Length: 137
Image (tube, rainbow, N blue to C red; front, side, top):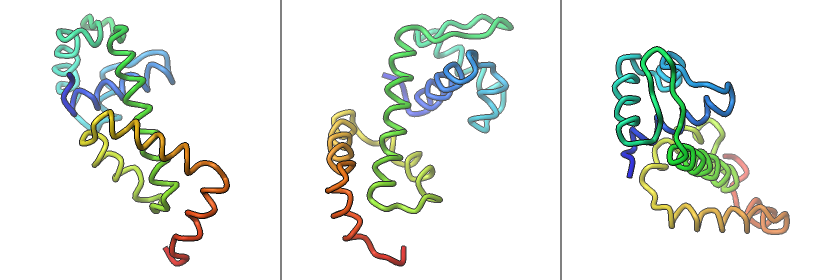
């Protein structure tokens, strides 16, 4: 099981691979706001733990294990953003709030939040929820 820090790296590598087709140490460092040397150390660890394959100066690719976890981590992040938006959290707080809570929820909790999001995205239920929220927030 990856640690929260490992999850952050896997998620970011997955996003870069999906959007650019590749993930370089410098791009990962920039996205996570860490030093390239820290990225190199983590990438080596992720390689040892079989989340990715890394060859110095050649780049890296996620293994099937890494891709599967990367997909799940991106899903978790996007789901929590949707949930916070639905319940009326101010847009400027959403990213920070998601980053603060995403590693502290079990997958069972994530799945249940997914059920709630699906329920609340029904237009009828969304209107009821919106009516409950304060107008001045």
